[in-house]
Image (cartoon, rainbow, N blue to C red):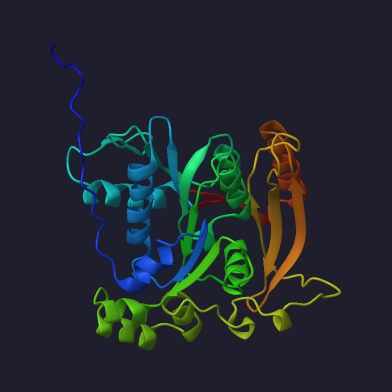
Length: 322
């Protein structure tokens, strides 16, 4: 009798080499790992190895693994890196969807988080939130829901960027201990220098050239003190009457989700400001949760009320249109 069953293939897996602090930060048994890290300290590469390992060792047909970035363009950087790291023939990629499918059927998705509403619905078995301090809190809420059914692990990584974002606050809770299944780690530029993956002269040059607050956040993973913040409370106040010689502009930020269509829809906001050469004055704010047609009507009415002397500024893909 001829045995027609397909031969079982055995694949030997060996984790890519990392420096000890890098590996300890990410390959921890806790479900939640929050890593505040310097630029070029190995956080992205380490998480690519971690997410691929999750999909390769524990994945299967129909199992989804997510890489989340602030915008799709940033997610594409990680997508391209993983494709370069993996041996040819060990995966299938889809350039349009930015997915990598492994031989066991598991699929790694690389997604932007600009619209949190698009992140709901899937069951995800492991996730990475990259540049977390630049990702909206609503997107974190959405990603967390996708891990509920699977109880999947997540790695939250990024530079420190102020103290008022959700990632910084979550890091402080993890660092303080007392939270079961949470792990905190910090990777600084000097950890990377010691590991031999970052040149000493470049770290020293950054310290000399950059403002202290910027250097601390991007290279030492330390939040700038409130006194070093861009907006300082003592410089903000209320005035009785606006100056008459202001240069006027209204800056728009659009959202087109009506209230009730999503768990926490965003507002369309238009802020009218004036500048007299020394200070900026906030003159008016309009905000609305509405459908596209209603948002268009809001803009039309507001533009007429502002008059020709007020520029209207709309941000489109990083470019301003007046």
